[in-house]
Image 1 (tube, helix red, strand yellow):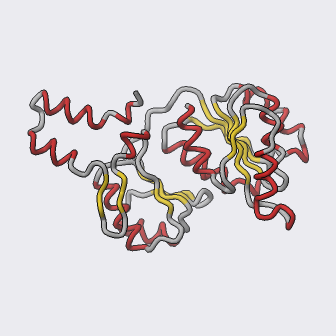
Image 2 (image 1 turned 135 degrees about the horizontal axis):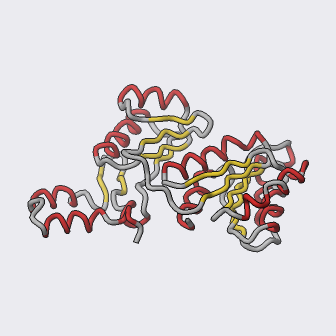
Image 3 (image 1 turned 135 degrees about the vertical axis):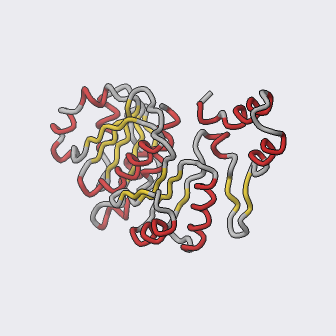
Length: 248
């Protein structure tokens, strides 16, 4: 079992050893499975079920709601990831919670109580172009907070296909490869055809009019003829990272 899923077992073990009282054990367990904040019901059971706490999507949320959600997470001493967060959101939350960190490129606010135990192997995060890096960094930062080692392989698209061939040995050594591409999205098929590792394809909204804000690369990736490829939603670096973490 993933060691991050052992919180309940630890509480029961401490109770059986007499290290904590029944009242203390109750206080630690009473908020399972969720906390009702009125405007939100926060899934405290997520870490037990999935190995990582609920991740917060910032876009469209009121600042005071994000403040209360962040306070709840930090009070529970859990790692925290807030995705699609603009710098103004971070500035507001940082003034309330100085422990928070931010990646401007990834638009992710995050907190880890301690350095996570790194998993075996590494995940390669690959982009076709530099315009895809924002989505790639969303994936990379998420993976790092979750305790993964990362190899960034940026700007190796099919317009200069020799660039990705030069990285073939690195990609083949990866546990999982995330391929992020806009335009026509062909890079995922190329990478998946070169290696025998799982490939997670992420279409991006980068491209001219007929790319239809990511729909064209999405359809290309869904029609990939190289086996071992799965596809997540447009610009969903976080979703790709979460799936890669589960494979790891």
